[in-house]
Image (cartoon, one colour):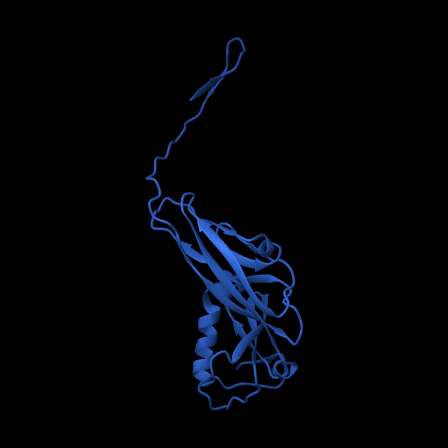
Length: 208
């Protein structure tokens, strides 16, 4: 394309225009529901932050997916990244159950799913016997979105404790990731427990 001005002689500038022709979307996106738990101490509130990531995919390679929170009342408490589906609490959340309806669209088709969030309190006696675990090469977002559930399940299996017994009550990040883990009802880990010999003294103890 060439554009001229009104000068004498007229000056002009050329620019190339690229037209991309893609096949019309024929497949709706598929969205995966998210269910997660946030643990706080006693009657404290969850101060806000990353909750997890809603995953979706589309069989049409040229489609771009856009995430959104559907209900106005949910948007007052939560925000979702429209590109990657990361869900955040934008203010403090009291202990209780929350259901957030989210959508994903490829511009033609829209699909919906519920995010189920449980903000759960643990007693101070549990936090007094917490342990801190250090994980390298992970950000808090990566851990929460991709690894937290499998990490907790694997730890419970290795320590031979019941499901939902171990909770992550704090995540800190200073070059490496630190997780504070609590057991909902107090228990003792034997020092002969395979690689999980432990130093259980107080909050801030480190899993050896």
